[in-house]
Image 1 (cartoon, rainbow, N blue to C red):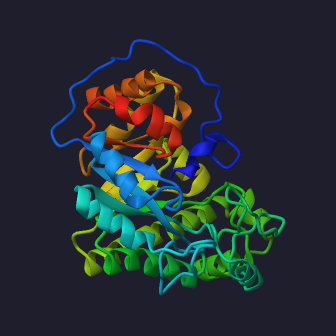
Image 2: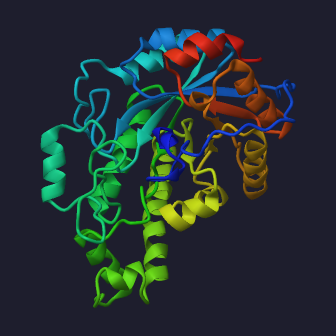
Length: 361
C-alpha cells in the first residue's frame, strides 16, 4: 500500500519491477482542483519525528499523511489488541495525531492487513503452531514480503482481530481515518491451509475429496476462489460497519491494486465491489509506474469503474522517479484526468530532500 509498491507484475504482485520506460506527451503543468487532496505515505513512523514530517508536508502544500501504525502482528502504539512492534517505545498514534491537529494536516492510520509485520517472535511462533496462517499447496507457511507469516482470513478469530485493531485506532485516538493495506491474498498460490479447508467445506456442506487439487485446478476451483474473495470482502464490510458505529467522522479507505481485474483474479481483492457497496469513503489505487501514458490509461479505467461514487486518489510511486519534473508530470496527469487528489509513496529522505520543495501547488 505501499510496500506493495516494490514489485508489480513479478513476485508477489507489487508494483515496480517492470523495466523503466519513459514516454512523452504528458503536460508539465495543470491547474489543481479546488481543495485538492495531497497526501504521502509514511512507511516507518520511527524514522522521523512526527512533528517534523507533518511540518515538512504542510510547508510543501500537502494536507494529508498516511502513517503505518499497525499490522496484523504488532502496533506502534500501546494497543489493547496487538503486541507492541519490536523496538517501539513511543506512542506514534498519539504523536502523529497531535502533530496533525497542530499543523492542520489530516492523519490517517495505515494498517497492514493479515501480515504479521514486526510481530514479536513468540507471537509468530504461536500463530504458526495454532494453524492461524496461510499456507501454500504443499502445506508450507510462507513468509513473503515482510519475511513473516500471513494470517488467514478463513478464521473468524483473524477477521475479528483485523476489526478490533482498526476500530481501536479511530476510537482511541483523534485520527482522521484508517486505511486498509494488503487487504488481499499476497499470492495466487495461497491459501490452502487446514483452516481454509475446514471453513470452505463447512460453506459448501461437503468434504473436498482431493485437497488441494480440487480447489487449485479441479472442479471446485472457481467456487473456492469466489469464497476466498468473499472472506477478504467480509473483513472490509465488517470493519467498515464497526468503524462507522464507533467513530462516524473517521474516513475509511483502501490502498488497492491498480488493475482491478488482476486484483480480483490473482489476489481475491474486489475493490470495485467495495466501492459499489459503500464500504469505503475513498480509494487509492497504487498506480506506480514511470510511464506517463500508462498512468493516464490506468486512471481512465479506474475512474470509469468508480464512476464518481467516492473520491479516487491516485497513488503515485515517487520512489521510482529520478527527477522532480517527472513527479510533477504525473501530478499534472492526475489533475488533467479530473482526479481530486493524489498520494505519494513514500515520505523518506529522498522525497524530503529532492522532491517536496519542487512539487507544483
